[in-house]
Length: 138
Image (cartoon, rainbow, N blue to C red; front, side):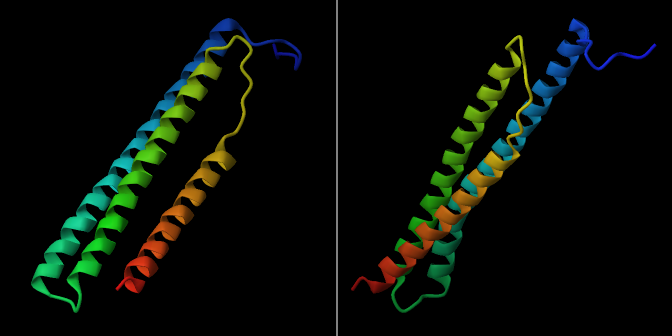
């Protein structure tokens, strides 16, 4: 016996599908948290590693190099926190939409990709501006 294309799925089928989508949203959030914590850790480690290298191998002007390391490290930390907040908001929106009676699937792939690309570009611009600002300062 086959289902007609106009027959609505049973309540059990809908609930199981919603549960799978909720679990997928939780896995996605966990992945975002992992990546954001890695980025925050990179920001902290970048500053520490650069300071250690600066002590071992002194440069011509260590003050400028330290300023640059601080700016890049802090911007990586800020980017990690920003992406973590966005991922949490996206998760909450997804879970709230799953709780509605009439759920309709909306792909968020383009939005997620756009946020990631814009964030990487902003991080690159902050780093580029920091490099030129610190180098051009007397």
